[in-house]
Length: 343
Ligand SMILES: Nc1ncnc2c1ncn2[C@@H]1O[C@H](COP(=O)(O)OP(=O)(O)OP(=O)(O)O)[C@@H](O)[C@H]1O
Ligand SMILES: [Mg+2]
Image (cartoon, rainbow, N blue to C red):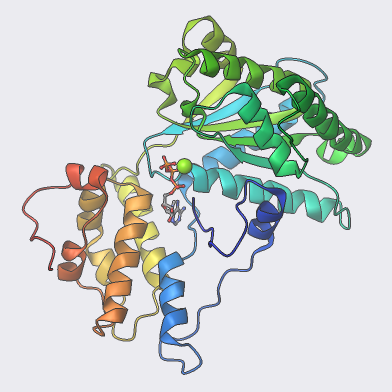
């Protein structure tokens, strides 16, 4: 999951989410500022900031519209959004950025209401049963869930609690009368298995009970069972699909977007001997290496930066980039004839 330091609670519980929303990014000093120890500079490069991407802009706009459409809707069939795409294209990052932006807007409009929970962010556990799914909601909210409670009891308690928050929201209806629920990794709900099917029913039920806009993310949902058959049709009929594709490099505009992204990442680097502009010069190569996946790009640049620091060269060259081995998906798609990694 992006930007989550092990020192922080996970963002799928309220305290962790809150910490994520209000976290101040690590400040960047000059590369040779004596106040900046090597370890802290390594930490800085192992994380790097999140870039605003075109996908984020599209998702923000789509969800803003859905929130408006859903605002006055009392029961049933609220509209939602599914963010679907290949692995490591930044779906979770986009979703969390969306939640953060919504949360901050809510807090700005209603200052001093610490009990508010404008955003609920959970990740679907693998092979989730309906009870596990709703327990994730409960866990986020900090509700005690004991083994003695059954699924119906937990569901009721969760919906009541969210309903209470909803009541608060109704009081300020004209400002932001809708809660936003984000559910990550929906594709793990395999509707062909019984637990999966029951869980998707549970999702539908929660979607009807909770007066919120639901946003799902999923790996390639088009090919999953979630949208097929009778159950799938109910979800498909209510959700817009946003395809979170890898970034393209075909048109001039594609290239401009990619080059800007590379330039922005390069500007974050704090290496003592790096020649700014090197990465942009190799933007086409970087695209070929990473197949346009922002996760692979970020990995490649961060790892190269860390090697440059630890080995003392303090600069990223094309040769160094070529030596960094990427994830299997990116390596499978990259062009052949690269030199092998130095051992
Ligand atoms: N906008 C961005 N700016 C900078 N780095 C990003 C951005 N989006 C994603 N990343 C990097 O890519 C990595 C993968 O992103 P993320 O986990 O959001 O992808 P995903 O599509 O949810 O992947 P998965 O399908 O595996 O869940 C992140 O750890 C982060 O480092
Ligand atoms: Mg993800």
